[in-house]
Image 1: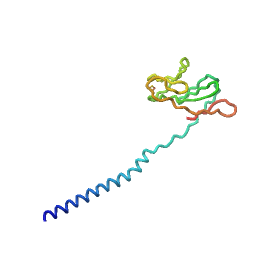
Image 2: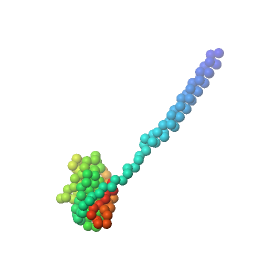
Image 3: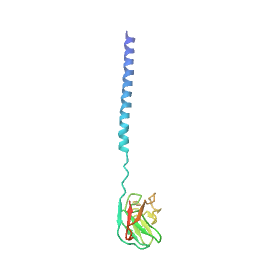
Image 4: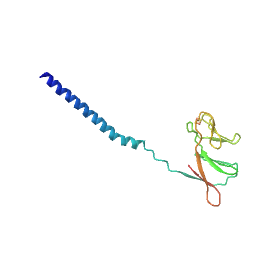
Length: 141
Ligand code: FES
């Protein structure tokens, strides 16, 4: 009689463990789409910033978010935010470098990192001429 009773208890334990396992799998299955949703990254919409002034070759325009350079043959812009910890870069005309005031990382006007704790280059931004009269630029951030 005792052995029959023990067998029923073992069977009950087995089915309870199976039921717990099934609940765990069902929970994870329902949780997966939620985790996917939380991880979902909405791409940032581009921002268009007008620089409504004429710059001559060699001139630089400092915006809070970018630095616009006008060369002999082309115009380009790079991010003004340091890739180390996000400080705003200054442009040194004498050294022709973008320098971070926080930890002294240095970048070329093209955005290439050359010194300091920053590990990445600056993000390049697109630049378009503003209208046909050529007085200004649009920087796409
Ligand atoms: S934030 Fe620019 S070097 Fe640290």
